[in-house]
Length: 170
Length: 176
Image (cartoon, rainbow over all chains, first blue to last red; front, side, top):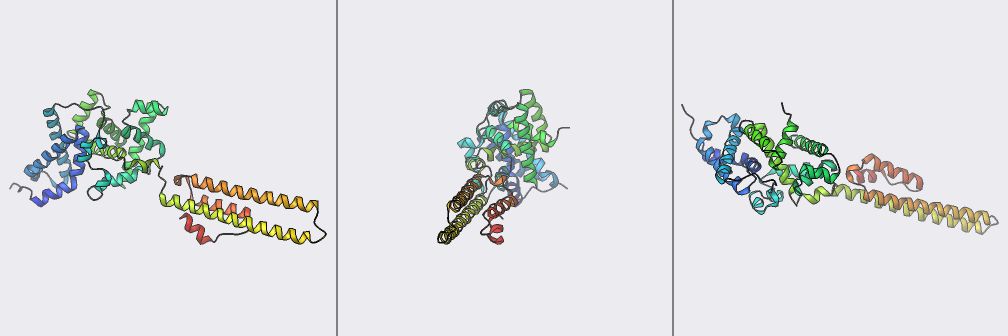
């Protein structure tokens, strides 16, 4: 016997649980805030229509897979190309789609926790994050700015990510 | 098999557009089926958003100095300075009083004046050292400060002054 479609409160709960992360994921794929919002909407329309076919234990993976497919389809349709520079919070459109951390106190604890975790990084690693994400320097430019080999800049980023992941998962 | 750390770095390079076209294609093929890769992309964007957030930047550039801890350090340093000043005053008053008594007797002389001058010079040095300690403590970043170190530094300086000793509860309260 086929499973019934998800009920509104189930969809709402899924949205609450996954929408922020899905939005970030599709933004990473599309690098375009408006398209990312559209992909998010399309994803949850799919959740409404097809969500009941997914197994509960793999729901997150299923939603992300749908989101990825939606993102790729949207990108093809819009014929956009990946931007070399990630706009994110620096772009007002992104600010709208991705409210700043201070605006998300209630809605997105993930960002708040990430904020706190950043302060626990060693200065050298934080510097690489800043140069990459705030100043939009490439790793080659970062290594030049810091006077270190590019491998060192990449290693610092890798260590920073590893530490942040550890902190955020603990 | 690619490790989690490498996957995170790959995801950062992907979301920042630093992968070559072929790498991007390969990574996107992986995104279609690999939830760990999708999670890595989400994680990379989360870190990018927070790192690029102006509201967060000042906090980051403050090199993780907790305002509370900084305040405590400054307060500790200020109290140290007060102790040093009191010690200086008490010691100076004591020396003057001794000098006055000695001046009234036949002991006062050139050697006595030289000794007093040397004592005053020594007290000045203690005060200068205390000021310097104050400056150093105020400048020190909280990350680099070990609570035991602060206590030790206090004890050493107070030991040098050899006059007044702050109660333990005060020192403990300051550096906790």
